[in-house]
Length: 347
Image (cartoon, one colour):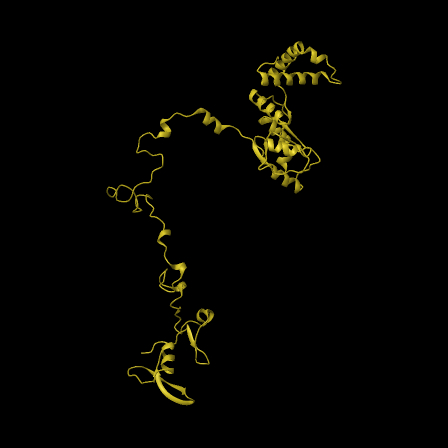
């Protein structure tokens, strides 16, 4: 009749005790108002999750007492707590109701289709449109030739994606490596120093760039393959120099890893487009180092001869201690300036 210790405790302290028939009873000594009473109450199996303390209050049992050594029955059967999800019959029991065990149907995984013939989730073979539609790509047009295949390839766009770009180096990262002591500003910093210090992973050549005119307070002499105007100005403002050195693929590998060559290769000459790029870097304020190709040497000689005939007055002026090479460079520079300004080298 009374199957739990909790019910027996409530019955013993609140309700009057009555004898019940057809139930095994035992003798219990109760105290009411300081007077001892002896009566018989129904025999019941004690619960392991609650106990009655010395003051007569109902208390819960600790987990260690409930599931620790000696917590099993005499028969060896384990009786877990009914609300314990570890030993529950269902993965999602009804109690306790918590936010973490509420089902969110929006997070349920969708039904995957097309995983074999005998997975009961295939396509087509069990009737028309019975198991959903196969997801198509965005370019699928029902079987006809899609638009991206009907149109011809644009060669400039394709070649632009295939162009070999330089390896970027932020000026702030260069400053960080200098402050950490991984680069020495007392000596010129080359691309091999940047490679050995793991500042840049050099593949095609290093190109400097500066974001938002980041300040650079160190006076350095750096040799790279390219640079933007902001980086050049930031380095030159503190007295440093930026040198653009041309390396082709083999020369760059020999520069980074000379120990892999028994005999170092000869320095390659730049192409026409590369000469234009290097001269553009010179116009930005860089020092440019490259071996002039033969066609450029012949062209400059021709320019010098023409300028010497036309500008004889300039050559006769007192220029001071100017060498022949400096005079030729000055004439070539004057020729190019007039060509850009007036469209012809002679005024």
